[in-house]
Length: 556
Image 1 (cartoon, rainbow, N blue to C red):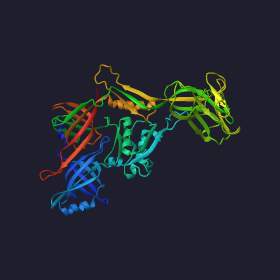
Image 2: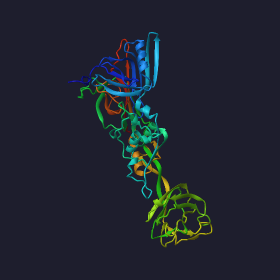
Image 3: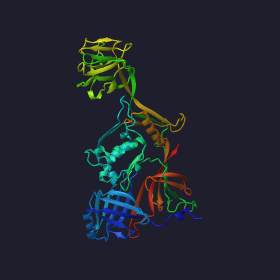
Image 4: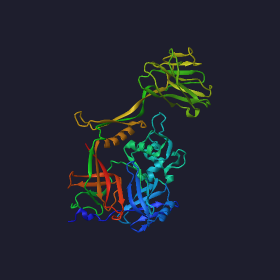
């Protein structure tokens, strides 16, 4: 019966490297096709993963090792040029794992007859996103009653990601979006929850910082792959299995797919940690609107061409006032704005200090009642009275109407021809005008594993998302956060005898240790991978091993 060793081709991985020249052609190093425009002496490369940018460092000399040929290379490449790296066991099976930018060039001369070149830098995608500036806002529209419009798809996470990468108006000068520089956006690579973000703003901030804020909303991660594809994914997901097995027992007779087995070398480490574990998390969003005092009955109305009108209320909720609203309509075609004031009470009249004043254009008022919602965002007290006041405007044919209830009691209103002190007629039966008063309360939700106080590691955390102002969205966010934070994180670090199928960040692999110290058999997600190739007189450029870090989240 065959062992897993029979599913591994016992030959080294080799790098293929191209360096873009100043004229856009390339220098190539490829053992498989015997193309040696330059010769790699050492290559170290870490592809990008989980919002962490990748990096590379290559030491090379010219194809024939002469100073003149090396100087020719130096004259034809420059900082800012791109470099591409493939890795494989054959030219046909090689996989592109890195696209970088030359940031630094170092020329070393051990003697006058020989020199080598060391170039290094970041991956192209993270370098671009860390360096470009955004200036844009996404604001969810509101319904006529002031509530959030939950059909506004312009503020969906997926749409915001698309706008950031593809819409040049997102750039600080509305000039070049990342895709104008070559980044590739596809909705298939950006799989995110259907969450609407009520308010998301970038005020001359880096693209990378704002993208991190977005993925943090749902516990995701982003990076740009070697083909310049923009990727957003869930780092805890293990759904897409690569079919690769990493195992420490080369005699194991498990039947497996040829080319998809790698061997774990000695000196690995395994970490189990509760550093991110919580029994309960509180989700604290932005401010939610809550109704405090209202009069919504509409039996009749008063026209505003002659008199000022007002309605008095006292808040019952000791919270900041978010909005007031008035029920109004227009008569004819007024040309002046409808003015609305929020005033403090003074001597039982609406003549105290003006807290806020608004001007509503005629075009925003219909001939039938409409509710106009006006932002306040001020603290008003439950031990004081306040007035909503609308001054007179227009003439008998072209003015506005403030709608009200007829009769009734327990609501005080008033009228005046001038709005000045001592000019107001105040009573509790004739001026029951239509108004609403809303206070702001923080959006709060809780996710828990319902542990008792005696259970271990009863840690709690607050997840603050001030840009989320509706309970449904915050609940989705907290659910996704809890899927990760309620678990124990396990990390495997080790050196792998390379399988024929190249390992890549984000892949799900099966790791099985059965013959060495700590044994386990589970699926992990690959995070960091480091490739190191060295060439000396005794050793070729290839390698049989590379370093990996893989993580998984388990129930605690």
